[in-house]
Image (cartoon, rainbow, N blue to C red; front, side, top):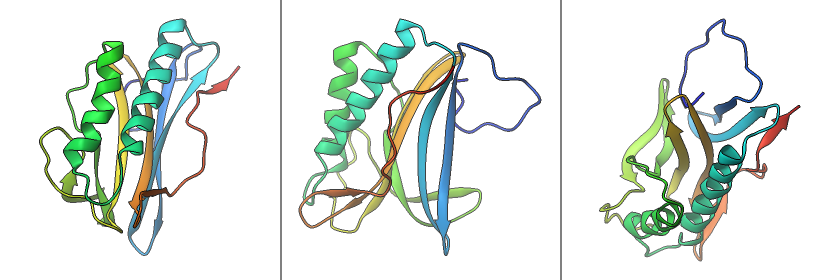
Length: 166
């Protein structure tokens, strides 16, 4: 499925279909989300290539994170990779997180997107998302990140490669 936030149904998982799973750890209303893509069965080459491009874009954007950089600069690094692969994404690639209350874990103070001139500072936290949606399928990886004095810290250490269940 290409849906990042879906409601449960009685539909069965289908072999060859990518499924996006997004969840969060929560402590005292502080939310730390992450998303990964799970593949049931063998992936076709287009899905494999899209997942590689998705992770490359996410890595590129993350590499730009440090105090003094703007949200726009991080987004531009991310989009440069998507442009290289001809992938279109019309939405932001990150948003601030912190104290949240269901149903929303976003803080609504910054967006990692083109044009956002918010300057990153130490201890700013955000969820950087690389969700690519193409009609009835998609690929998604994300990281929750803290800006440190000299760069960044990922809150999670869990592989972003395809999680394949044969």
